[in-house]
Image 1 (cartoon, rainbow, N blue to C red):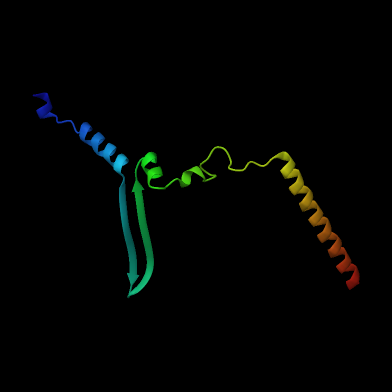
Image 2 (image 1 turned 45 degrees about the horizontal axis):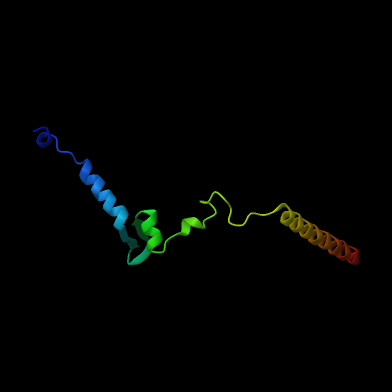
Length: 108
């Protein structure tokens, strides 16, 4: 009798959420703002809601290679790589400085 008075919606919501995450849900829409037949703004909205497993099944895995979302950088720089790059930059700066000094002397 208590179930009839206070129906439980938790099971239904859990089932719906489970189905959405398993199968996926796509919401698509366009918003256009026109003034005097001149299009001022167009917003295209595409939303996909699904589980990570389902996303990988359909070929979406951009989060695996996004450096802002991964804890370990995809190509960590070694100290020797940094030192070589720094030396190359310093040589380039020295070359630019010496060329600039030669140009200044010629103008005098």
